[in-house]
Image 1 (cartoon, rainbow, N blue to C red):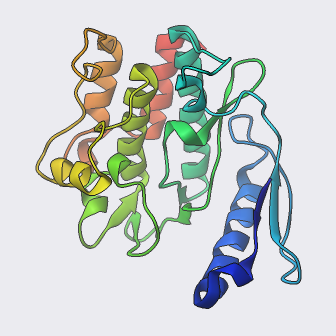
Image 2: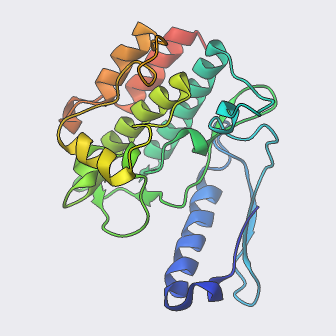
Length: 244
């Protein structure tokens, strides 16, 4: 359950209400896909706290599984299945004409049988079909996950910027590490704009990402969005790797 009191945001309350209603509408549109968190309903009555209800998944997110105290630990094969599921969910979003813009391990939930479900559609926006992308200059964005073209004016987001973020998700899931470690988000963004990308070693240790995923990450991290893998290609590639 996600609950907000719009009057708590002062002068920004109108924007908060619009964004909340937008997220509810997007979830209602996509929440019936098997790899997207199921949508139960929403209350947008302004006399009460705004409430968004999705199915409860007790295992939490992929990011939750990284914690030492977590009772849910994902094996490599389980991570591979969850990544495939997240890719399939994101492809469904793209096929509906939207970009997600917040692809990260914290936004992929794990159900009781170990399947992944994409969640948190607060930053999801419709793509402008005429230009193949959208431009946004406000809001709190996940800088350490973002593609270079999204980090600098005109702050473009597209299916291919989502694919870049999916590459970061793969790295994060397989290493169980925070992208760019202890760097501040702004410093991580500066490195990306200088051409740096996430390394394949986990924080300098000997844990190496499997070569089959290194190839896919390279396809996600290309500087030129046109040269990146599409989500169609990623779903097919992950399906072949995992024989899903």
